[in-house]
Image (tube, rainbow, N blue to C red; front, side, top):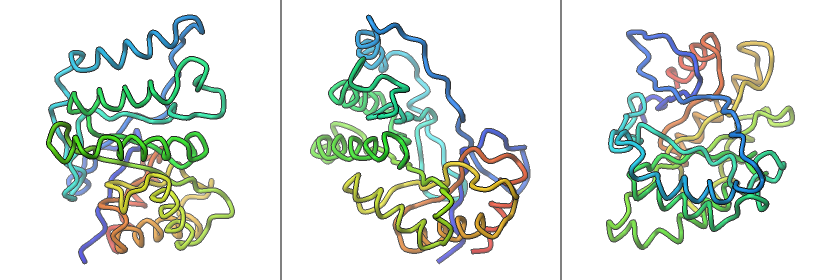
Length: 237
């Protein structure tokens, strides 16, 4: 098998000759919505999505992989968020999220980004249910196939490459899918750059790719120094 297909969603990346990575925005801000009309705005936003932009029809290839994503992605942090931050089941619920999901696909906005920490796994479970419900329409070409990304949390007790593989298998179980298109480390796990544990996380990503559990791997919220080290480390595997 060739080198690991690497992607970054870190917000910082200089233009170079040798690193053809794409970036996603990091650290989103929560919209300030009043409790009274949060639900109405949520539904309205999803309904208006098809006419809001033409950028969804454009696709981007992730690095040297064969993974193509819509140039705009959808973050699923708020789907099932049980922290109280977004107002899950107060201003919106599962049906609203599924409506937004279908509206995105209908608009060719197919890149969906989730994580194991979103809703403590509920975001992935909801996405899995939405994927299953839309499967027949995707098979009949009534809707385009979604491209799924998820992320693992570099928690202190997760410091072996096997633990990263186990985390992805758990995510796949929650989403009821055999593989994802992109698997990422959610944030740098330790303050020391190039630490032993950081390398184990990257080895875990490489192992996930080699096992066929993901089509590409990457990192999220890394600064430029960490990003370049991660890219160099994974390029050798």
